[in-house]
Image (cartoon, rainbow, N blue to C red; front, side):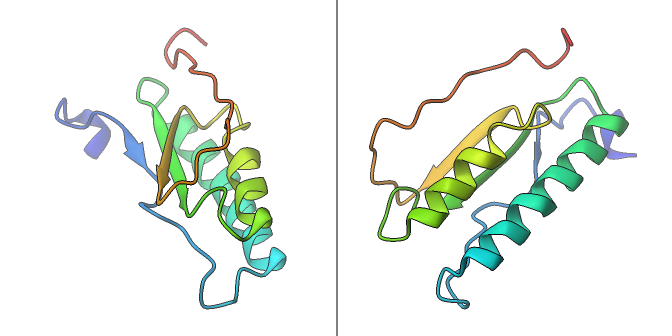
Amino acid sequence: MLRDYSEVALWQLMGEPICAPEGGARSCHNSLVEWARVASEEIKRLDLCRPVAVGMISVGGPQPQGEEAWRKMHSFPSIDAVQMADVFYNELNTQSRSVCSR
């Protein structure tokens, strides 16, 4: 399994999940959030010693539901690292967590 390779530094769920084709619909963002929760919890079940990351594109942009989804995903105990692309920085508060000390 890939978790047995020391070259794997972290698990990235998806590079830049986005709801552009759906016009940024809240239902799309809700689906992304639920998917991130389920996927990250399963990865943690299989590998507690590596961080799990996920992000969003255009966080803080014209679609507030995108930022809301980003904040929800990064509040999960199973998400350790944050990723932002095309960011309009507006004081997004994040906290780092130690993965293997849980």
